[in-house]
Length: 469
Image (cartoon, rainbow, N blue to C red; front, side):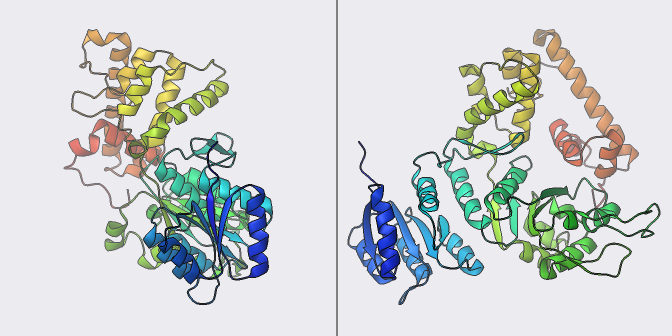
C-alpha cells in the first residue's frame, strides 16, 4: 500500500488549524502544521517535502502570498491551495500568477476540501487526469497532459473570481469548451451561458446582436429586441473571435466592462446588467495592438487573467482518449456501431501534426465512421506530395494516379472542385473573405481553414485582401 500524502497546513487561527487537521487525519493524511509563514518556510528549508500545502492568505508577519512565493522558489513543483475567509479578487489573481493550484473560502465543508485535495493530488473520482468531464450535449473537457491539467486547475480557480478571462490559442484548440468549463465551475453555473462569434456576424449587425434595438432604430426594426447581454444577465457570455469586432464597437464593449450598463440601438435609456465576460481569439495580440485592430484599453480590461490553450500537437498523449470518447459519441449520434481504433490508425494519428487541432480531429473521425475504411483513413493522414500532411490529403497518390483507387480519385476531384469554387468566390468578392464565406454558405472559420488547406492564400498572394476580412 502506498504511503499517505504529506500535507503542510499553515494557519494562524488555532481553532481553524485544529478543525482542518482533524478533517485531514480522518483520511489518514500525514499532517505538518505551522502557525506563521515564517515557520512554514523554515520547515521546508529544513527538509520538509510536502505533497500539498494548505496556506492561509491573511497571517501576521509574511502573509500567505509572500509565503507562497518563497515556497515555490524553494520547491517549484509544490502544490499550494490558498485559504481565506473572503474571496479577494486581486489576491486570487495574484495567487494564481504565483503558482497556486486553487483557492478555498472558509468556512468550508469536508466534501469541498476532499474535492480540492483529490484534484491536486490526483486521487479518487475527482481527478481529471485522463478522464472526460462532461459539460453539455456533445461538449466535454479532457485533461490528460500536464499542460491541460494546469489549464483545468487554473480554470477552476479563476471560475470563482468574477473577472474577465482572455482565452488564447490556435483555431480549433477548444477555447469555447474552456469557456464552458469556467462557466460550469463558477457560481453562475445555473445561469445562462451564451457564445457570440464576432467573426460570423456582419459588423453592421453585431451591435444590435449584442445590445438589442428599439422599434425604428433602423430599417426593418419593427419591434423591440433584447440583445445577448440582456438575455445573459447574471450569466456568462463568451465573445469568440474578439479580434474581429469593429473598433467602434470595441469602445462600447469597454464601457460595458467598466460600468455594466449600455443602451439599446435607438434608445436613450440605460440598461444595467450583471454579466461575466469571457473573450477568445487566435490573433497575434502584439500585432493587433500595433495596427489598432484591437484597442489597447479593451485588451487590458479583458486581460485580467489569460489562459493559453496549447495546440493538439503539443498534447498528443490526449489523442487516444479523444479518439475513443469521440468515436463513442459519434457512433451514437449517427446510429452506427463504433469502429475499432487499430494500432496502425492510432500511430498515424499520433504522427500527424493536426494543424486544425480538435476540429480537424473530429472531422477526420466523422469521415472514418461514415466511410468505414481504415486504410483510407490512415492514407488521409500521410504527408502530401508538397510535404504537408493532413486529413483530406491525397494519401500519397498523385492526381490522376489510379494506384490510389477510385476513392482517392474522388477525393482529388472534390478537393480540386472546392479549391476552384473558393478561388472564384474570392475573386467575385474582390478577395473579401467574409463576403466569400457568405457566398459559399460556409462559416468564416471554415473558409480560412480551407484557404490554408488548399494553399490558395499563398498561391494568390498578389491579390490584396480587404482590410476587415
